Image (cartoon, rainbow, N blue to C red; front, side):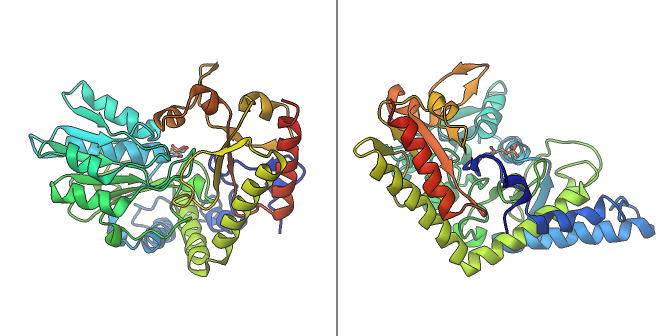
Length: 385
Ligand SMILES: Cc1ncc(COP(=O)(O)O)c(C=O)c1O
């Protein structure tokens, strides 16, 4: 069934920016905005059902990650989860561990959380990535030391979809006594993730990238890992994130985790997504022979992400001229300045190629007809360039 938010508008190929809320997720959230309004900390009648809802959701999110319920901290956004992971881990690290190692291709939430610590004497090291956006574990091995508190490397990049060798990287961090955080914003629910198997200490989950609402996230914190809180107040969320729980959105995240888990174990729908992504790629190549260049890893890539540069176009102008497709450019627009994407530049792409990049991201409601039509519309416009 088509999603009510996606009918009658352009073809939506921007699932990495945000996903529509799944109707089943909405249904799971609504009772806590209507009937069950109580504060989960209340010991009287009205607290009981909301408290159960938060506990159930914690179980559901933990199950998706192979974690224990007590290791899940609910937050108000992915940026908050990243901040809690980076600042929290470093502020709680033993004296002498004063370095964060990360990548230049990380989300600003990670990069800026690292920067915010520099005034306090923390060093932030950015490891280089290759032309596909991957970091070489040998590079981490060469850089890490007894002074490293935390390594923070995203599971899958939001612009290119490139997946990192997380298990190998986490093992290196552990061998040197450092903690390992991975930002799973784009990967959770799209690829199988088991925190035990990966050996990560901290993992960011973002609601609105997995068919739950914006404004809810979670951080997996491995049992026994010390993290300093970033939001102070009452003792909610194991003392790590104060504030009365957003019960409705927490319930939504739990339901989203259940749906994602079913999709992952069924794997037919995710295979479908990879198939559609590759069809879109092939169609663009067919319609624009010799002009389409893939940005990101050809195999180690999120199932729904296709980032391509089309020779001879400026992607921002191209998308503006194709109102029938809602997609993103690879670039971030800072204060109205049309700057090439830092992620693509860090991969060694020229500014011209970075400015020609289109990020096309597919999701639960993307259809084959939409993919073919989007390729046609994009190619038609690019053909004029
Ligand atoms: C990789 C990554 N990390 C973190 C975030 C931030 O999540 P939020 O928008 O919930 O703060 C995003 C969202 O764009 C993201 O793509």
